[in-house]
Length: 480
Image (cartoon, rainbow, N blue to C red; front, side, top):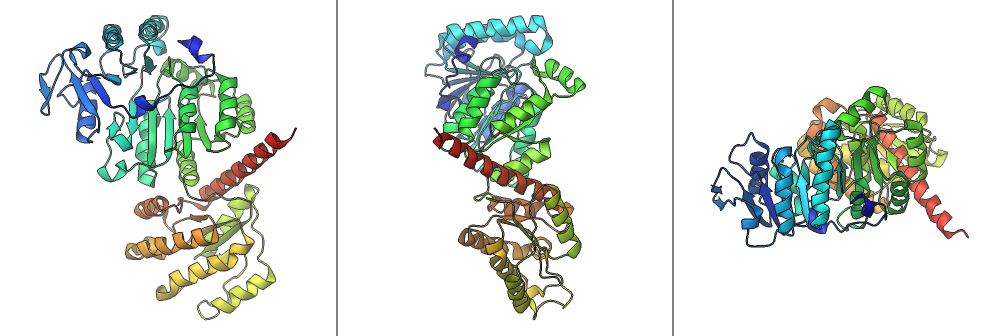
């Protein structure tokens, strides 16, 4: 099966992510068991295809008849979700191959990550799959989350967060995958497709990114990886896909301790940090340093607009906040230029009736002690005035976060302004610890919100840098 990988050709994964039917092998009424939890998620979330529980201990689950084996199922099955211990996987895959099942998702641990004995078992599983024309996800993985067909084997979700979106994710760690779904949805992200890839014995990061690159439902591609087995091929793929869709990767396992843990966790070889950073940059990959930055990046790149340049306008209802934002921007090479004399005069003329005389009208713009009944109007007018001299805006206001009743109107007006001015607006709350709901609502509306000015600045740097790379890559393709 690895021989197929060396061709560099992609695999059509439509039936994996949006199957017409799934068999849950190891399904159980015991919620504490893997097969029980997976069955419960698939059933309760209302998976849109046909579902066939395969169980040796139950005759029916939630009113759905159980089967002793996949060979007892009369109708075709696209995906087998294998939720049994490693020792039983071989015989089950023989049945799946006879049934002509296209994909097997193997949840069990106990394969290459455990050493030579486990590696031998993994190779035997792959041999069975290869002979049966079947592709394998995992082993040692948590499976699939695909909201538009209501398929979820990874993490429990609230109904409100099952709305499909445009962010795809591949995670070599089950923890990173479920954390990205849970943490991302809490921030306002919505997902197209998520895969927990585990040991990547067969299908790997190359296959998933290749599919996401052509998937019309996906706009942003994210990943957590511990090792990349087809380095040169993957970088070439990333350079091609990245010209139209941002690819954001959190790569771990560079420290000595992390590299040792990587081998025992997923059987991967982590690699050298500096070599990876240089190669990733040249291929247009956006690098995230840790989980929080990965989510921040996904939030920013899933927004309607990216910052096209480095000129940042800062509007804050607190002088200290504006200074903090300016420091953060300049430390990252962004430009917080003073507003022109013409613009400053316009701002002074507009604000003289609302602000005390000591308020600054340069960049940052300090909108301190705004009258409540005029706060939204004043803020929106200021954004409109400075738009001609900046590429993006960092905006901090008390009102929509402290008084939640004001938030929907704020969001609606800001979205209209963003679209009319073609100007990305990045929102920072005054008190991040009390702003969870507001951050999610702004982000869901396409106004990316961040818990600090420093994190907002980092994101503007990343989005503007990506735009520069896309422009230079397009120019290189035009040159002889």
